[in-house]
Length: 629
Image (cartoon, rainbow, N blue to C red; front, top):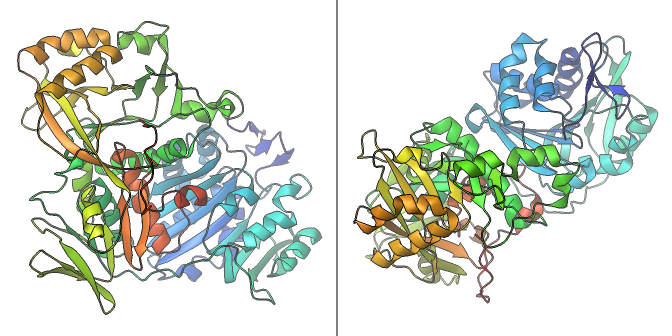
């Protein structure tokens, strides 16, 4: 559940848990501007910088973030990218976040944007994006010490906020402030409203040089300073040097390649995307429509958490770049648990129940009835889910300023020449040259990498879907939302060439170690058989179309890894792999693009460090593992 908040008669928010106000008596807006923003020398300090990173302890109701965002927006010398990383153990509700800003008309529009993304905040790291991806809010939900151990970045400014030290001592103890210090570089500015002796002493022990400054009435004093230890700080994890944007070549223009290109271009890179085909998204990403829904497991596995992190980012991009109703729809997805029940984590029945229900909940009888399923059917309803046309998302990403696409450019190999990669075709002719190279060619990445001595554990997975145009009255007998769980069904997909007509799509097949895209008539019957198990009533309605030759087919080859997780990481200096999305490219591609960019630029990661490390490419074969769908 969201953190309960009481609103006092004067409109001040109050925490029953800590017995303290969320803001000072002088008002939260003045405190945010004077104590934190100006206390860290902003906005002057970030003028003309490529990026700026602020670390805050205690997000609360988000007022410090909103004030900082507004200052960035109003500054003609603002940095290209603003990162705001904030820890919060007890997140407020979206309604309280908005209510907190209602007395400040200049912040209301920003608060409404924040409210729209302020959902599903389960423990862990969540990436929220604003201003076309130029303002990135990384919410670390949990204990400050634990959350900052899952990050690797250097903050330029630190807002030390939170309830008073006597009310919430864990926020101000030596362990918490050491965790903050590990995220600082020499010269990082720090500001806070408390001048408690214990806080000052602990900050000094952690390497901060701080002093009292005149406060905001009725407080006499605040605290300001910088990180400047008398010793050389020892980092527990190496911090990379941020790259200066330059030229990059991306091989492959499916979801993975296009996502990487867009993420790098937003950071100032000039990106050339090469593809052997005559148009983008002609491989597995040419699927007419795909279902995007989170994975649920009793232990909330790596795969489950990654799927949620990725879907959150994909939804942000879809809302900003695509046309709702024609390119995508956040319709919700019903998962019919045929082979085994999808047991939700135990924590989702307790303290995390509210945030968990924002993601997935037991399907209701009304939803089951709409799908023609009995009320006792084991099923989940995924709230933040729906269908997307992958090719539309690819085209939108490739339209990002700074991205250039070139088709019919078949890459054969690449060689290092000086400080750049030279990309060559089969005749040894140069196709492109850049200091950074990203291999994102799906299953073809395996053969390309082998030519340079890299043996990637990537696997081809063939899939064929069946689709047909709606016949009169069909919309009344199909579910109003996609259904998955044993194959899947998208009931109403607007396809090009059909004017205002809709199509349904079912499937797909799943054949490992098969790289053929040949259409197989038998796969249509396979898809129908799976549909009979998934949605018996719907299958009966569609059976005639399967029998009279009105069903069309599309086949493609996905690229999977033996762990079922995407593969993202360096193969050698300045050569990255982004591949292995399997059947969840819509869930993983945008996340991987942002993760690659974050690692290049030493930015805060969009997910926990141990999750990011789990994606590092494997170059040795392993025994097959059970299928995760």
